[in-house]
Image (cartoon, rainbow over all chains, first blue to last red; front, side, top):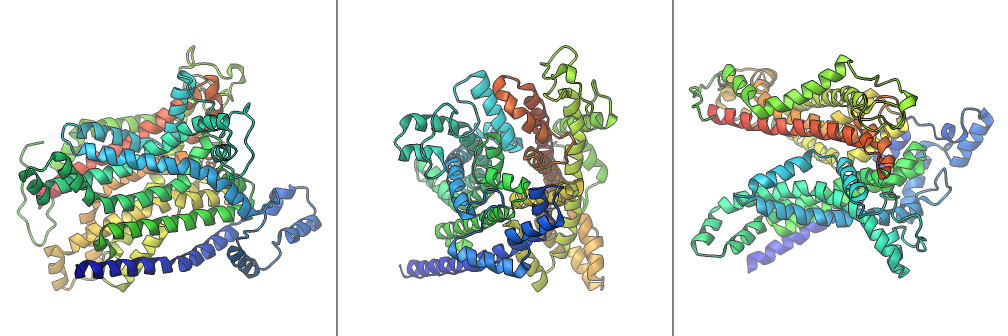
Length: 341
Length: 294
């Protein structure tokens, strides 16, 4: 009893230390992002004005965008802005960047969160099945095929199958059919907006639009889950405690469930890696389905040299990755204190 | 397979290596390895040969969107390019970009991995730095950099190398640490051989075995990355790549014009699969060799 208590204190201490690192990490990420974006030779003014602009026009435009300020002043502006939640205004739309960021995040989350949950469920299930001798070949085949499949190729195959050959799903562009009036925008994600406005027709259609992207993400992202679960299950079932369980006449179910417990810290770590990769990976899926989430928003900004938006996009991805890894580490430690060392 | 491998007497001074001949024949008799290699060599060779049924670079506006058949086995795309010729032609760009990126990563990673295999504060610091680097969302950063600077082959190779180098570093570092514990390294040290010589003459030759599976895996991964970047519209403008062909074809999918997307997708999928399966098989052989030599 005493031991568990002291261990609990150790865990809390670990979690506290890790959480205390967040501000330092954010500061590093912000600095790196700012200097990366601004050190890259890009020409936002030229991209806006075209080749015919006079030097006076260019100078005026630079002043209007704040590009004539010294780098350090602009950096301090950004740092101050982060505290107040202001990330500047877009060069193109003139809209507030943090507002636009929030407007696109929900659309991406609507894809990524169900995709991640599907991946975890599917992958862990496959991993457990792989521990059975008669099924391991099939699981390995599925995992091998999915592993070689780029996510956008799988999405294309899905469109071909479920939209073109067997037309059960709507045309794979956007979050809603063009002929259905969109619900009033509140979060940016049509499905959530439809629920908030109690527009059930639009919600049904929005859900149908979600099926293929979520399925593509879920299938591809299930591979790492399947691999880690299978390998942990294999070693746990070969371990003495499993033989002991079998020998004591425990049901196979129980032995498998006990073995699965040992796989949890590994699954948590892999879950962090998968979730972090989905931030960048959702760009690909959004591109296939013309889904106006954060990836499309960032990609458009990049082709337009819209630096404040690019900066916010990279910042979001980097901070998001950092927080996800951190949470995964904390969960892994809570599941198995030995990982903390 | 089950033939007893020649067990070399474990010698202290020399690296315990199996006879090289046995190793190579066993690998080249594996039908899966031959199939994967054959498909890759066939596709890239055809691409390099320049012998296509139609020109992959000169469009023929007379046959836009011609369905597969009638002299155009894989059909014609919306610009008038023959899809078969262009799919094969694109192998050159996609596979060679990936190969060069993975090669740069393998060389850099091996070098750094061996350097970082030594005990000490510096290599501990470098390992910590690697942790931080691997926490960077590289696809997002790559897209931002390429999008702002404009794309070129050099940048693509650098990005592919940056994504893959940490994998090689970790692999070689772990392997080199094992090698350092072997008797012949201790003996060499006793004889006063310099750290430099130990690194490149004693450790390097003994970590190369694990490089091949990782290299193959990295090339497959890199082909998928090149595909992803060009799918996002960031490949070199004008050059044919599978990703950009798929991107261009997607809007036509709902119109039942599937051939512009299906054939480059198949090419991308089979080549990535070939490299990853090759890696898996090589891994098996490497483990077998190491097991036999221990």
